[in-house]
Length: 447
Image (cartoon, rainbow, N blue to C red):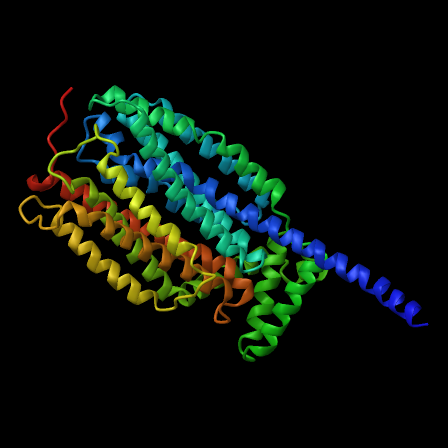
């Protein structure tokens, strides 16, 4: 009898074990998918940022390094707003496909551009693809387990590191004598090498990542229900209303939900009410994102003036090497969530501001006081601080009970827009300084 009983228990447990095994497989499959998504989204932009100094020097525009970053950021505000506010009804698959086309266009343009204006247009496309992909993925992550944020952050951070490393290696293998055509050849082969990423990007987003099935969605809904029960009486109706709006937007609502929000005017009013609510919820975090982005990119551009004259003939090229150091810091910090979370993002932002002031003073030929040997360490610190603020802020938005479940995607979209604000202000400042302060200007390289 005991043997029969054990056999019956094993039979009863079998479906449960199978379900757990399948759930585990889907989890790791999605983790790998988001890692690849982060990697492919940022790698072309990472190579472009590392190549910023070479791009401008190859076109005899050495004082416009910040313009490369600015052009890469030029369309991001528009792209992020379009994705957050106009494309919410468009399927994620269609948006991932559109972004892959945008990415490939920018890569090809940078590989074969023969003039600074064409290079700038291509930079805009690559930057827009990076911003669109980032904004898109952060919204998509709201549907999945919070640990997938780590996968995305690790892939995104590794892309920066890998992009800088690839460019440094290409610079060592391709002979350069400071001639513009030699530098263009370096850019050409560096960007051609990452063109296949578009295929990996599409595979990860459309095939590898599996959206939550009904059983997984049931777990998520039960978790949301528990959070709603634990929240205040004032917050509960807000959660229900927001979740209903999002379900209608995604075409997943039933007839009763559609009836509740049948009027376009009501839906529009509810939408803007959600945007206003999210702006208030993430105001401090958004400010920190804007400041950390401003200070980080000011430091990166200041690296172009770390020496009196540009030197692109050595291996490794100094500017590219400093960008590699920055990306090492970003990768380490953006992969640190499993080790520990940091909530004092304001303090980290303050440290980065001090670091930025040091770099600004050091880029002036008269007041330059830092030995070249210490600059890689300061750049690694800059990357660590930037990556830590970035990944911890979006982790808080994804997991803190302060942010209603139905508002998380919108809050992430609102916060990410402030990354663009910070970067834009930094590029404007550095472009003005490089072209108005004689002590910050390069002499044009010989033809």
